[in-house]
Length: 80
Image (tube, rainbow, N blue to C red; front, side, top):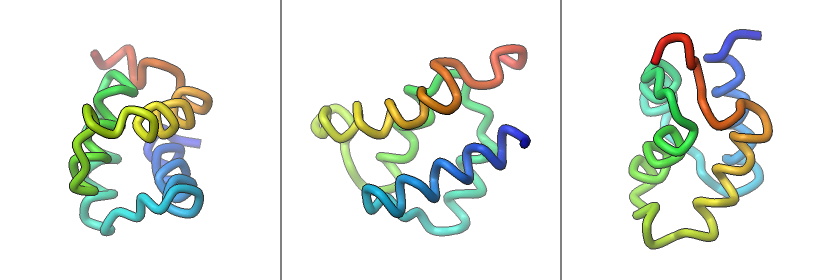
């Protein structure tokens, strides 16, 4: 499965599990951003949701853990 599909799958998971349901246009933008670090990817998700990742630390860690469990700490390292 491609990285883009994996990210889509995880975005769907956090929508169902945590209520982070992003609009389709934002999903496509996030999938194509090619962030190198999971931390940056999760920050982008929080910003789209209108949340400050620095103020929602517990939730941020929870979302980040989901992504790290599936994708690792760095995404697309060869492209960084």
